[in-house]
Structures are given as C-alpha cells and as structure tokens.
Image (tube, rainbow, N blue to C red; front, top):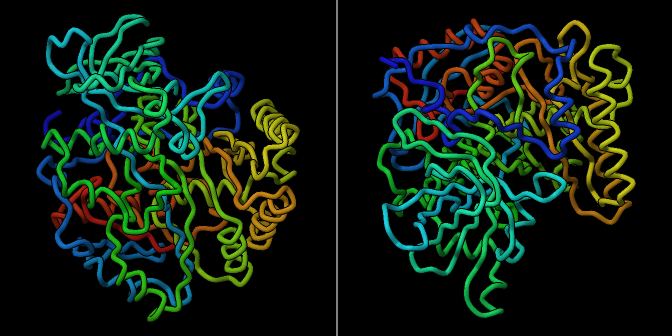
Length: 491
C-alpha cells in the first residue's frame, strides 16, 4: 500500500466482505442489488487521498477535548483550531444533535472446545432473526442464551457445526452457517458467520442479559488500525462518549465525533452560545466501515443501520427547523438519521418514475410494519429512495421537514410509543441536498469510504473536501477514530 492506507485496513472492523448484503429482509436485499436508474453517477477515484501511516492516531488526545479542529466553511476558507474553541465557531442559537448510542464490548476471545491452538477472535456485529437483523438495543436487554448474531470469526471455518468457547467455558458459540470470507490485509484470514450463543450453567445463569454477558466476557472493539492489539482500561473510557446512554446500547464501533466533548464543553455551548442539545441513537454496525470497491456509487450496496429518536427530541428538532435555527449534526451517523427522518413518509417520494421498484418496495415494508402494529416503527428508507431521475436528492423544505418530524412524533404518541424507530440505507454523496443539516462535525475518515462521501457532500463537493484533507495532512492533524475533528459549516 505504500503511504496510502488500504481502505480495507482503514475502515475499522469490516475488511472486505465478499458475499454479504446487509439488510432487514431478503426482498430488500434483492431490490438493492438491481441497478437503479436514479442513482447518481459518481466515480470513487475522486475520494482517494494519501494518508501517511504515522498520522493514524493510536491514542486519543489527552485530556479529552484537547484535540485539534479543522474548520471548513461552504463560503470558502479552511483554518486550524483546537476543539475547545468550538463554542466560538458554532453559530449562536444552533441546535446540536448527538448520537448517544453506546459501544458494547463486542469482541470475544475464544478457543476450540478441546482447548488446543491459539485464541480465536470473534467480533459480534448484529443480532439476527428469521426476518433479518434485529434491534441491537432490544437484544442487549434480553437473555443472551439462544441469541443468534452475525459475527466476524478470525478462523478458517468452512461450514456450520464448528463450536468455539470462551476460556472459562461459560459461553459457547455455535457456528450455524458461513456467510462469506473476511479479509483484512495484515490480519489473519477469517469468515463472516451466523453464531448461536449458548450459555452454560444453571437456568438462572442462562437468564443473564446480553449486556451483562458482554461486560463480563467481552472487550472494547477498538479498530484494527489501532495497533496495540488488546484494548486496555483507558479504551473503556475513551472509546465511549461522555453522553452515551446505557439504554441505547448497541454500537460495535464508536460514533467518534462525540468522543471529543466533555461535560464542561456541552454546558458551555448552552450557556455561552444559547445552543440546544438533542440526542438520537443510530447503532453503529460494522457496515459503516465497509470499503467502497465499486467504480461508481450506483454499484455500491449501502449498509442498513437501525435508529431511534425520542418524541421529545423529534419535537425539539422540529421547532428549531421551523424557526430557522442552524442544525449541526455531530457525526455522520447523526446526519443519516436526520435526513432519513425528514424524508420517511413523504408521499411525493412515490412520484419519481426512476427507481420506482425500489421505492415501492420500501413503501410496502412501511405498510407491513404499520399493519403489524409496531408502535413507533416508521419503517425503512432505501438507498436511492430520496434521489430523483437526474441523480440528485433534492431536499424537502425546512417547513416540510419540520412537519415530517412532528408527524412521526404524533403518530407514535397516538400508538402509545415514547420514541420512533426505523432503519436506513440512505446513501449521501455529493449532489445530495440536505434537509436539516447546516453543519457537520466529524472525524477524518479513510479513503474509499461511504463516510468520506457523506463528508464530501457536507463540504460542498469532492474538491472542497480534498482541499480540507490536504490542509490537514500538511498541518499534521491526526486521523481516524482516535484522531482530530473537522467542522464543515454550511451557513
């Protein structure tokens, strides 16, 4: 790779999955594979850049909040700051939206039942059911025994039936089926597989919730480009945001933009800048790090992730949108949730002649969820559903977006729910018009990633993003999960 970081390494836990399609139903997976005429033509070569390996942060800046911050304004100009200056850069009266999903100890060290051989690394990715992927937050509150999870197994498993167990024998992982190869340069080969968790011991012990089991047996899932091997006690604190919610547990990677904030900084934004703070949850799955290997966006299959937002948060964000207050998304995960919420349920999405099959499939899924009486469930936004025949994703107005959020909240309240839940495969790339996001605060991402595409859209295009990243490399900013932050301000 030379001095350019290979996408498979730099995208965290994913590696290259050769036969995996991430989704919540077989019908949607099949629909996503078919060519969609309203997908934008977007060569991925424009997102490549040279990242010196020594700029990949191995530890977070100490103390928390002392990282550097690059500011890029849509109106022009790039400048270097420290993160503690954020309250002077945020527009007065802004509404900041954070992802408070908490990271779980998703990495397990196992061995073959006969106790021979070296330890086998297992990374739990997402719970599954017969209908597809399940809600991680719910799975963590339920008994671990009998749950089925998609996982990365760093061992050459060829078929179902293989059994792995943790060192003390309390947990056994039964391989149900192999989904595909898992290949990361510099790492031992492995597979993507479905595993059933079998907890040994008395009946009472088998009732232990998934969250407690992973706290006891799991490790913090720091990315493989953090070359220390095993996570330590410092990672347990620093690979988690200060506002992470135990009730929103479910991420297998940190929403890294939030790692920079301290409680004092959050209070300062409210006190000194009259900012409003809201929280949503998107459970970061390994699909976030899936490298883009297609030559064009229309051929890339986006991952699906689950999200949840309280009714109070929806109504607060809707008020700010209606009042014209700047809305700043803290992290690319937050952008996907906000822009999906603004578009889900809008009838005019059905009117485009392009991509009608995909749109109709997503609409049917929403109807099925409604018919099933899933209180607070608003369905799924598919990859290109927001795009028109010209390959652009034109945004609803601020008033329409505010109405959409209020409508979600009203319907959920009538159904007796306290939050709305859904999933999104939305692909955000240059040419995407933002409905709710006036600014994006994020980390520096690896080449060839969908995260870099989102950042390029917020920056105003690939050329503007390249300008910011070249500035960051020259100024020796630190990159990736434990690195520095950048703020793309669109107003």
